[in-house]
Length: 266
Picture 1: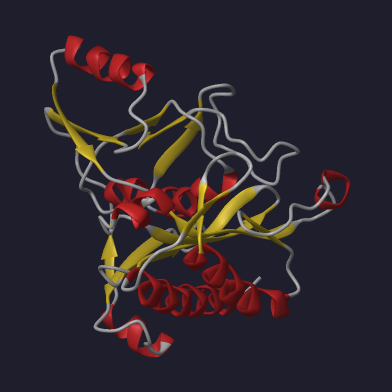
Picture 2: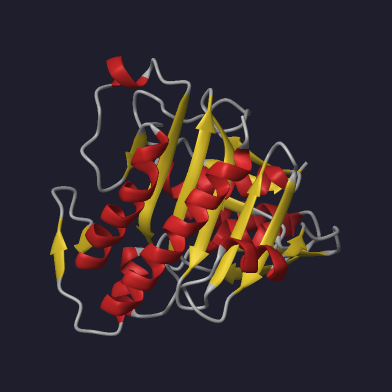
């Protein structure tokens, strides 16, 4: 499988969706609420449409937060699928703190093999795959960039070396009791702990580019929240480990809710 073809499609989809999201971000944002009480904006819907338009021609099925979910009897027959969050961090989008992303992952046999994360406010693009085991970051001057120009701007990134300072990534919206207990357990080992707060899948990006050591997530997430971030982290040698199985998170499950997990160096 030539992942570069799919990488190019996913990158172009993310950039165009990012441009549309920023158009809406710079205007008055109308917020609606889904049945599960999570917020939904026009940006979520329009970004989803753009990404679908890029991915549908690949003839690989799509699991997206904003698409109608397909029955597991059909899904379990898929070897490949895209997993998409067209606007990860809708709460951050509404708060206007800039910490929202577009997440696009390609999954092969339930394992994420390619990940693209785009941060529209900063025009920062992260992408990598588990075959080449490399991850790149590109800082763009505008949303519309040719894939070739991005390849010229890219910089290879990787995780940090261990030190006595343990930087733990927490969430602005979901710092659970269990996460606080986990931080206390590190301190009991005599380590100095610094908590770094970020929204959306930016938490994965912090670890992948060596700006944090560990990301404990002891709160609910869905597959589209984590697939792209897991592909990126695993591509630089990090682990995304389920608390239930002590194995990497798997995807296209019957229930798209993830187990609690920890992202850390191996």
